[in-house]
Structures are given as structure tokens and as C-alpha cells.
Amino acid sequence: MRMTGAEGWTGAVRARLRLGRLLPLGAPRDGAWLAEQAAEKVLRRAAERVPGVLPGRIRVGLADPGSAGTPAVPPPPAALPPGPLRIEAEFAAIGAVPLVEPAERLRGALFTAAGERLGLRVAAVDLRITALLDGPPEPAGTRTPVAADPSPDGGPVAAGPREVETDGTETDPAQTDRAETDPAQTDRARAADCARKPGRTAAVGPEGAGQQAVEGAGGRLPGAGAGEPPDAIAAAAAAVPGVARLTGTLGAAVRADESSVRVECATAPGHHPVEVARAVRAAVTSVLPSPLPVTVLVTDVGLGA
Image 1: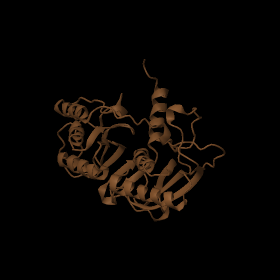
Image 2: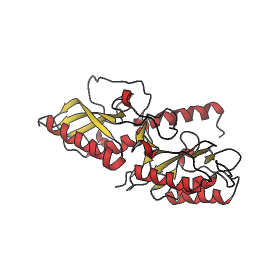
Image 3: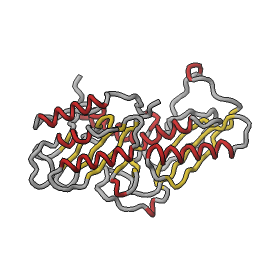
Image 4: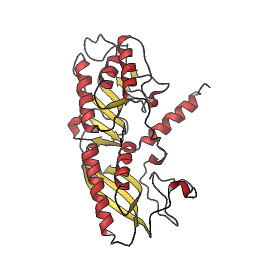
């Protein structure tokens, strides 16, 4: 079935909204951003492992927008500027224990996951208790389905009235497709094959279906004296250890012009996203004929076991 222009545009908008905010990853000099959708997935897993806690809505944003810094490289469209982050999390407390105990365990788990697992600079974790439960909820297979919560929490919906907080960001991590697809070796082979065949483009990763793997002018690498196909950038990025696949949620997996380069990727389980992003920038820079700013956007993070 052929997709119409309107359907393709609608799908692209939905894919962009699912990413949520684009969070500064690492230090400003790292030139990297992480999709909130990917961060939420990791933070939720950490929260689910805290005893006595049933996590709900989890959002990440700037701790103090007024004190945000200036990016060292061109940021992705609508990305947050560099600066410390704030995690806002809702949860239901399980069991008759002092509420401060599960709250502090949850706060510590979120701080640790954000910093050590992702490389996010988090200054504060704000918690909100939404319910007090006598015991754990029934297993998912035995519960009666409930209507989806329109807020982007990706977590369980407590019974009874619920206060919904909004901040103007239209995103729905709950709708995220969290299935891991396409092995990293497959994507690297595709990118390398593109590099061997000038003028050829290929979709890399599930987000790139129907899209170009690279986007550049004149079939050449940007920079003075460019003489290689821009697919070399994709090949270099895909070959970095820890890159699960190249993605293309914002259009193309690689966007290159005469002033800058942007690469989108997903990281494999067991790899630190900020370290992978740094390695991708170094690999891409090494194949450019002349120095250019390189931006990396990590759109997904592999959870592993």
C-alpha cells in the first residue's frame, strides 16, 4: 500500500512527539542529546525495582531554564539547551511503611540511573505520591484493562480521581514502541555497503523505513575538498561499538551540509549512551575532509537483562 503525503507527514509528527523532550547529554562540549522517551524507559526500569513503589508518570526537563547554557554545536530541532536537569516522578506507595522510606529509595534509584546509566546531569528529583496501596497490584494478565492515561507517564493508572499536570510539551512516552529490532550487525553492514556504492542511499533501522539513511548535498561529504559520498559518515557512525542501529526519527539518520553534521542512533544494551555519543562524534569527525561541528542524538537505549 502506498502511503500518501499527508499520512507520511502525520506519521513523522507522531514519531517526533514520541521522542519527548531532547535532553542535553553529558557536558555541553559533548555535543550530544538524548530523547526523553529513551531516558524514561531506563528510569522506569530503575523505579520498578524499588521495593514498595509502583511508578507512574516520569518526566525530565531543565531544572532552571533561566540558567541554561549555550550549546557547543548546532542542537537538534527544539532540543533543550545544556543545563542541569530535574526529574519529576509520580508513584503509588505499597504497604504500611513510612512514606519517607520508599520515597528516598526511589529518589536514589532515579539519581543513580540518570547519572550512571545514562550520563544525564540531574540536579533534583521531585516526587509526588498519587496513591496508598495495601498490597501490590494484580498481575497484568488478570487485571481488567483500563483506558489509557492521556498524560505521558507510561505507568499504571491509579483508581479514582487523578490530578494531571501539564507543562505544554506534547509527548506520550506511554505510546512508545519499546521492542528491540534489527541487530546492530545488520545496520552496520547496510551502512558499510552504502559507503562502497556512491550515490546509493538506504534506510538504516526501523525509524528509517522509507527514508534516506543520509541527507547531504551533491553526494559528497561536507567540508573543503570533499570527495567521498556522505554515506561514509553513516558507515563510520554505525561501526562504533555500542551503536545498535542508526535511526531517522527527525528525517534522516545522517544529516550533513557545509556547516555541520548530525547523526541519530540507538545504543546497544550494556553501553553508556554518553560514551557512545562521544565515540560517534570522534568517528564521524575522522572521516570529514575538514573540521565541522558534529551533533549526536540518541533516540533509543537498549535495556538488556
